[in-house]
Image (tube, rainbow, N blue to C red; front, side):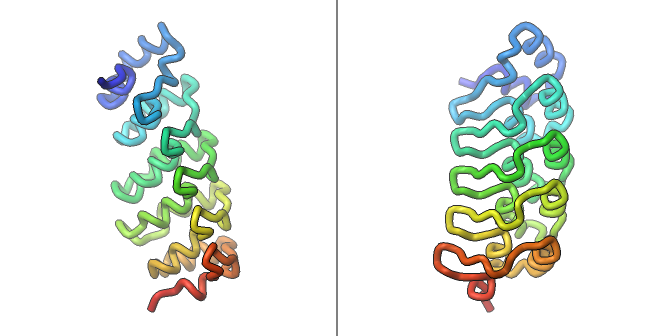
Length: 184
């Protein structure tokens, strides 16, 4: 069964959500079976006005779901697949934890690079870098965002990451630096 807050959120029904939150403040933090809050749902469905409303009312911008994905992880994924950066940028402005790791130990920057094949551009990574994301953070494989960009041959992303200060000498769990991970 679907949680009522999530139904209103998906439908971008600000009026009903406002009434619900006015009556039960805790409704902001209700989680579904996957641990997703109304903010996760608003992000996933691309409802920018609902995202703004929920944050204004006090939603936790860095709340992890059962997979440890935060709303920012979802926003970065959808920015890559849908091409819209608005929600991601709003979460960054709202002080979302840019370096939070999900279940796979990927940060938002790792997600930006992992799913960049939709556009293969730097557009999703730049706001994260400007917002202060740790460029040399490692994931569960010991890879930095630069390792991933390098392995996938995303040259524009590699260049962007290096210019932003990524360390090409960091070794992953296999002992590889970016020079070792390059595939030709």
